[in-house]
Length: 243
Image 1 (tube, rainbow, N blue to C red):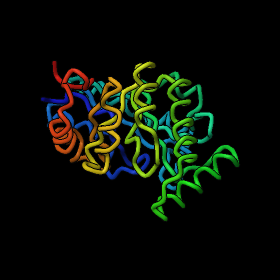
Image 2: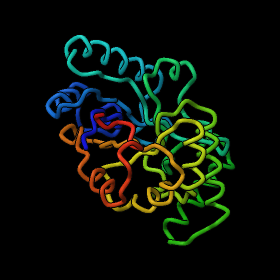
Image 3: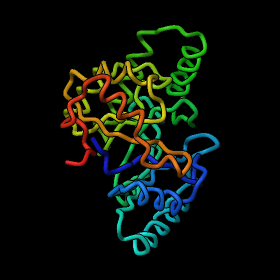
């Protein structure tokens, strides 16, 4: 079992500690065929990409590095945020058309587009702090993220179920229908085992990612591999393995 692409890596443009070139160099060292640059969408408080101009700089830098490092594919993407109950994300349509791939995550620290979603985020905070379960909140969260899958050409949903109560069986069914994978995130290990187990019977595909925030973790799939083996996920269900 060997993953040959790592689409979920961060850089200094958002919450990462290294440059795009740093990530590319580590990807080459680890023998990857492709590396994706997927910094946090602009609505993420404190760490999001700094708007359209920053997207343009990222794209320009990637284009230059493609000439310098032809031995690896360098892909321009984003980890967009859901910002409303209807699944709206925080990336403009003009930018979406220029991306090589789109990842979407449901994060709590985002600037909401509506008061309704602000209230939903507040309920998620309370649910996490109080360790309580809320069936109506779970349904609302699931509706928002599945709406995003139906609206956008999403390659994968990142770390679904992490800190957000989601029906990942329903999410898996919708993702399978629309050709979207669920991420097995190698940065969180056992925290994500319940969502993987719940989604597994749906037949959805999975994408292994490092979610690297430091360059040396690019291409580190060790915890993802462990979960795949532990849960006996068929290798044909994993979309970025070497065939």
